[in-house]
Length: 214
Ligand code: ADP
Ligand code: AMP
Image (cartoon, rainbow, N blue to C red; front, side, top):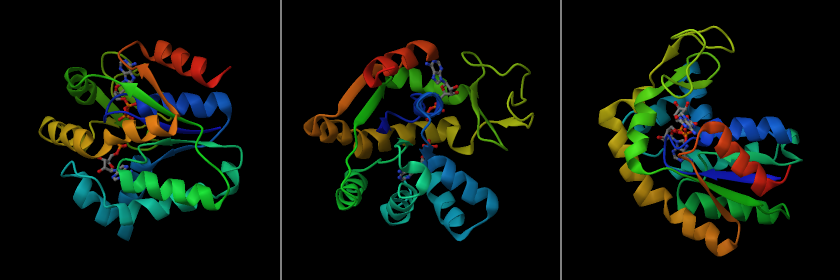
């Protein structure tokens, strides 16, 4: 099963993608996580990506597409994968389609996690991410057992630099301009499914399982 998670930043794509990956036993591929890992390791890619991420801008397609096209050809992707945060532009979607066509494959579902802008600002302000394993929480709706500490690995939880209020509005504008057109793109391909992302996390997941099948 090959799935794309669509939705505004903070809509809950990562939260749901992790659960999908667990239930269907497929890898969770998050371009945001890949960039953050590169920043942490101080790689050339990380240095370049950080310049854009800190400003709430998209990392250029040239730095993003090949990375994903390579990743989906690794052995663990043979049974499918869930893409989280990619594609984010029409050229990225076209690059993905071109690569899959070459491999004789195609995407099965593009799931739009629909959350209005009003809720997004609160979601991103309350998001806390583990500096070590990348697990995400929300200080009100999905809190860790112990404040400021990751349930999974015990490391510190932080507010991401790009979740600061001054960057959030910029990221939302970028989403509407560059990423939202993908909803039409995948509607035309007949694979778009929409779920109400304002529901509690478990209910959003149940809606997704209904679409994908148990
Ligand atoms: P995205 O990957 O789309 O940027 P996340 O999955 O990181 O979004 O979720 C953004 C924030 O909202 C996180 O703090 C997460 O814990 C919280 N969150 C995710 N899903 C829900 C939900 N259904 N209801 C309330 N909060 C949620
Ligand atoms: P995310 O973790 O998905 O919220 O992504 C964090 C940031 O990484 C984004 O705001 C972008 O700057 C960058 N990024 C992640 N995925 C992509 C992508 N597919 N294309 C361009 N930039 C991306």
